[in-house]
Length: 425
Image 1 (cartoon, rainbow, N blue to C red):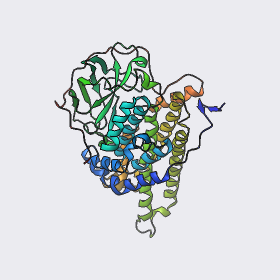
Image 2: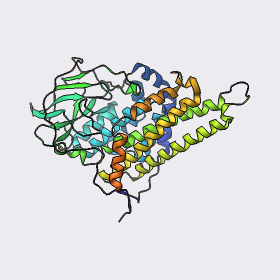
Image 3: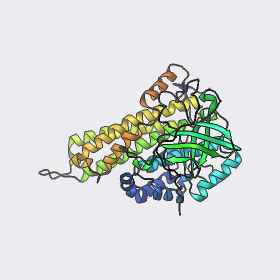
Image 4: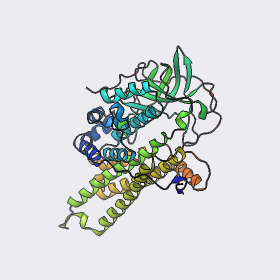
């Protein structure tokens, strides 16, 4: 019997990171993705050219099984890849993380026919898949409730509701919509995942998206009114999504992205310090003891955060859903604290110039401050970790019994027609 620490197995299977894949991702980021990051950030639009490059290099298939033409990367390698991409463009890494987690849901819950169809869309056509779960009336850090409704109709399913922070809106080809089956009882029995094509009538995108950071994730509010999807659009049975330990991968991936962004900012600040001189001193500021102490502290913080999410990645496959929630919470919490501190200090190391849009540390600071607000929040993470340590049953998502009433929503101001999904040329 394995020893356990805070509810998580201590013994772990050895995993060797595929360094060639990570280096290939780092090179692609350095040569193509990072040079576009400032443009997409400024415009607040989907990074379509970077998606195209990811597809051509096979990275849209990171979480697609090899039997369907994907990479089927192990979790440690996957985390290293998205961390490397995040160092050049946080938004591109985040959209890849969302897409890849949907791939994990399809692999875990999809039928053989669903897997054949959807994985082929990704591998052969470069189609991206988004995940729409947040809702404007519900704080999922406090209570995991879903008010978007799902009901049978016209030989398939009908979706009604309003979704908030809809990443890749107008860019992905399919969206995994988190909804609740009408009459299905509490969310543990009614939660359903419906794959809706982007061209589904009734999807209306509110074009307003003007945030502090993560601007190229393009995540506006979307209203779904009478959206009809096919009878085979659901992944698994109602309630399955909370039982399989895939949702926890969202938070683990976030941790790798946070550390990746902060590492990119620190790398820039270090190179700046190596070359920047101020009169009358003849040597770069890297030779100043104060600068050396600051850099040393930041290196330690990032190394500690990286060790935690790498350890979680190694233990992921053998952990049950509850243990995965603890692993992900630890990783996301320490990565949040480290990334916020490191990006702030990176700007300080560069000085006044660090606040200029011409320097990537400014964008890294904004991106980290924005994406670390994503569920689960710091309070929820430490509560999850504390309950586990105390031997109290817990879950990363705060599910409560007794779901909300399901009623169609009145559309907000939005476009009349859904946007045509992006396709690589």
